[in-house]
Length: 115
Image (tube, rainbow, N blue to C red; front, side, top):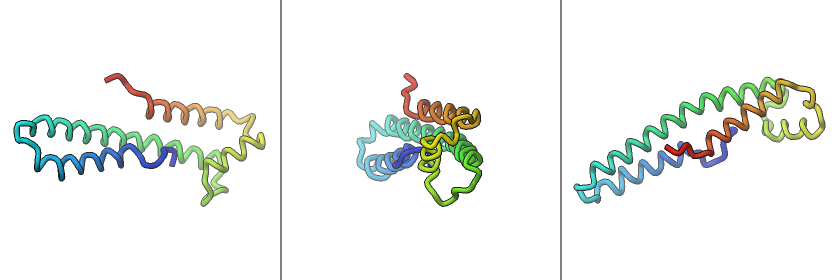
C-alpha cells in the first residue's frame, strides 16, 4: 500500500461508529440535527477517500509494471528504493512519471483544501 496505516478511511469509519453508536443515543435530542450533519460529512469524506483508492490501485499497478513483476512478495517500496540507490532506474522516464504521480497523490492526500 502507498498510504500509511492507519488509513484515513479506517479512522473515519471508526469515528462515525463511535459517534452513531455511543454518542448519538445519549446526546441531548436538541443536538440530533447537528450530529446527523457531522455523520453525513464523515460519510462523504469516507466516500471520497474510497474513490481515491482507485488512483492508489492504479499507482500500485504501475509500480508493479516498472518493477516488471519480478519482485512479487517483496515490499515494493523497498525494492524501488534499492533500485534507485543502485542507479538502475536513472534513465527511466517511466519512473520519473511514476514518482511525480506518487508525490502528487501524497501531496493531495495530506494538504488541507481550505474548504
